[in-house]
Length: 167
Ligand code: NI
Image 1 (cartoon, rainbow, N blue to C red):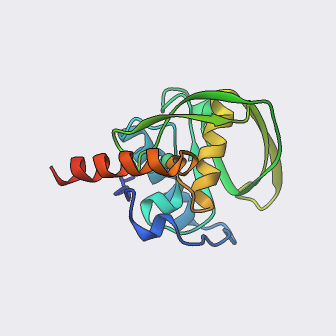
Image 2 (spheres, rainbow, N blue to C red):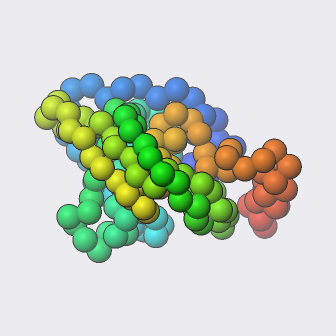
């Protein structure tokens, strides 16, 4: 087990296309464990593989932040197949430390996702879990949550963020 380095806003690896996960193997198993450990170490509720520099369609979510093993979810080649309702709330990202913004997301989503054994399952997420699923799947599509903000607001946050990073 190891905590991996998390790439931050501006790193091109957060924006490039991610490959679908193929056959399961011990290396992927290790990556999943490391991603959960990295997420907990940084007080997150999810992390996507590209955030640790591995450009594949895989993410982990645990809205208990590591306190309830039953809430660990591994998303493999996930696709949102249904969304309904709306929620507006505060959101942050391990790749943009120190930035929290109000973002509107669906209240409920159904995600089709592969299991390590190659079979597929459908997972339903509501409220914060729906937000976490959407946030992580966005990462797999090269999208960061600040991209939902208007260009002016995003520009202000980006300049402030870059200044902070230099200190
Ligand atoms: Ni994120």
